[in-house]
Length: 177
Image (cartoon, rainbow, N blue to C red; front, side, top):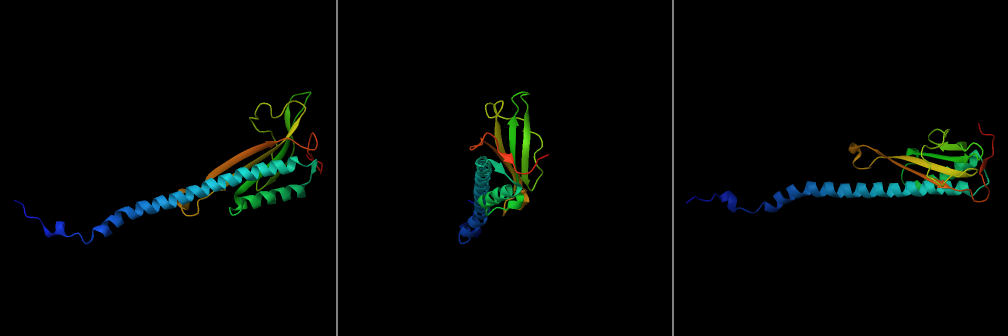
């Protein structure tokens, strides 16, 4: 019969060995859950911010560049505590010419990016019938996880359409090119 070595009888370090095996997995799961919940929260804030931008502009009959700046500040307050500098926000007025049935950008204001010069490629059916206009807001947010920045950042995007409420079209205060 084989003799048992004393090493197999000694159980004094068993808890330390189990902890050493399980701890890294538990830490990775904890950090992953924290980062996932942060990304979900940021995505929800991006969605709220873009709908708020479209809604605030759609409530007006005329908008100026300073009004647009105030709207972008409101969006920044919604995005808080996430960095507003990572958000590219654009709000535009789109119209569908009844005679030519072509969609064009009447005006556009932007923060941290360029203004929109062409209409979006795929406007949903029924959103912009001939002879009408709509406010189109879009946001692109570059999200970088706080703890696991070695994974890299990813982009959250969202857009929102809103019909003008107090007029058929929201106009820009300054002549727009």
